[in-house]
Length: 403
Ligand code: NAP
Ligand code: MG
Image (cartoon, rainbow, N blue to C red):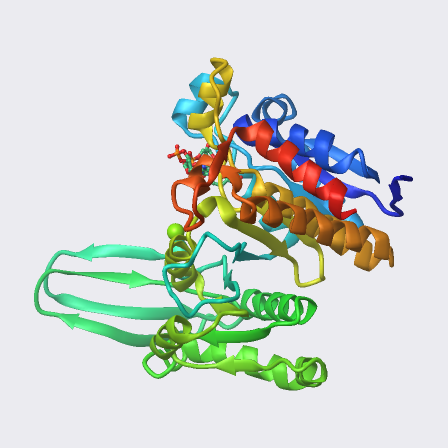
């Protein structure tokens, strides 16, 4: 069989530990035998980041802006322990934070559904994708303890005129606490745009929820920016493909999400998204079956698995012990990136390959062959628990059948 040809390179970002081992197996067994892979390779492994003073991460992000599509392996976010382990020159920022800042993007987390791994919520039949606004609010707050009686105020001083605007927060008659948070119209606008673009490109409805009845100005601004953008730029496009935009209060949304069948994108403010994404990941069954896509408002896409580098498995692997690490989310990062590349470059064979790769992965699990994490929770009778490489080879066999 002739290999599938590509036009534009994918930006390929390699990573760390067990996922780096998965990365090579996936490429060798599931990608390179079928595709004449064009990729611009960036090694974001911690060693290389340290050697280049983290310039490699910046270069990879800039290449993503140039080419439009990237696939990324999980990477270590260094802490003190990692600094000693890898003899680092300094504590680097999380690569994801660096890339997100350059792409100015929003992260979309979506579960991969498969028969035999049942969501805890019985009504969920399709994935629910969470879009978390990754700027501001309590994550960039300013807070202080209040020692005793006194007046706490909001003060804004205009840069040009020096005019002060003051508003009472609370007149304390004893000790307490106070906090200031902010957001910018630019960041909220980019968030809204990424959400609308992502929902459109995946043919899903978009939900958005805040607490605007209580927070009329702060949350109200989020609501207003989303609604105005939808009415002006997206309503017709959504309706043309049978999708809608739906705004409701956060508490109403939570209740509706639980009763829903899934199959939509749920946009959330920073804190709501932080909390709800962990709830949804667990409720859908497994963190190892969750993908993560970073979408910039200009329509640049970066695909990865939502889990980390699976350090515990890597140490077993180094000792030569058998381990069983689930590669599905990393495989779906590849298929997502290849599909997007295929769509942008008008390469139907590449899109078809991405579909087949995903189908082969799910069929393998549904046939009872899976990694240990899934075997432990599956509802299928007599699951066969495979090690890391056996599972990838089982997918390869299915893929060859399907292709
Ligand atoms: P983790 O790598 O997600 O793993 C936590 C635990 O979840 C594992 O020990 C394993 O449980 C289970 N697990 C996760 N993925 C799995 C998979 N594919 N197959 C089977 N089991 C899986 O999180 P971590 O151990 O807290 O973090 C390790 C490193 O990853 C850290 O250095 C962190 O900075 C980095 N990280 C990177 C990203 C990213 O690049 N996007 C995201 C998160 C964390 P058992 O041990 O019980 O088998
Ligand atoms: Mg969280």
